[in-house]
Image (cartoon, rainbow, N blue to C red; front, side, top):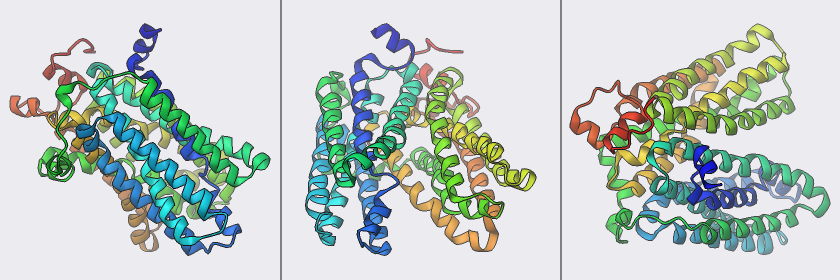
Length: 428
């Protein structure tokens, strides 16, 4: 069994961590798509709901930013357990004390605490993968990570809720989410027996934690942060204005939601594929070629298609699903990033996670600023141009060994990284 798992790129020593992550993210994803309208139906004003989600997003971003450096100093098990505790405490306060009585301050505080939970659990496990998975298959290991992460959060969680809410009600579904989280935590933290090499661990101190900030002084890390921020622009930006744009061609909101849901269904499988491709042809080639250039081209086609075919649901769905394919081209970035700072892999992963958080703010901000004057085409053009910029920056994401060796930036693949680490077994 271990041989089969390793052959498909799923590290056998971490397999229970992957299973635990699926269950944890199911528990975190049970409220996706219905919490806001449910609170509105209970009488919570829309501005208050928006504030609730905004504060939740802030705590998610902070926890994601700190997760890697905390793993580096405390170990993944402790940080993942801290995430579980935060989620459980937040659920008890939010679901048990806040919602039943519509106690707004209690809801706000405890939902923010709940937001700390999944980044500490999920992103700590991603850091653990980068400590434990063989470097020559690390791209595919990252692909499996994003596969199970999205499978739990965006597919199984909402699908489970759609069946469970009519049977047991909204509040009971939120409680069952906590059960999924607890079971996933047991599997991911205790049943998962992988160990982090002691050589990778740093002694806990404020100085070590501050490296989540000071590491940005290294130009290659700052470039990597820019690439990761660009990574999520379309994912978080298109939902802001595409429903409005497509409505002018006769597409309903329901059709948009169906199309956008299929985008992420396609993406979870594309994550695996491009994790594998990245290991074979090179991580940076995959990031630049698929995540940068191809994604930019797809976005332009997304804008043009309704002008050509009008209200054609199958064609528009197919074109939008190409976004799910090309966004997966960034999967190898999760494997490459810690090698940009091999002396501080945890801090590097913290900055990678910071980039993911920045996308959620930058993408809608660009739409808010430019949509009124430039329209959907202008905003999509800006996004596409930035994806091209990410393709230009990616070849400069070189490891310290490559920088010292003065290798040309055309060597953009995992194979050159592996050569530096004396693991050249997978050269294409």
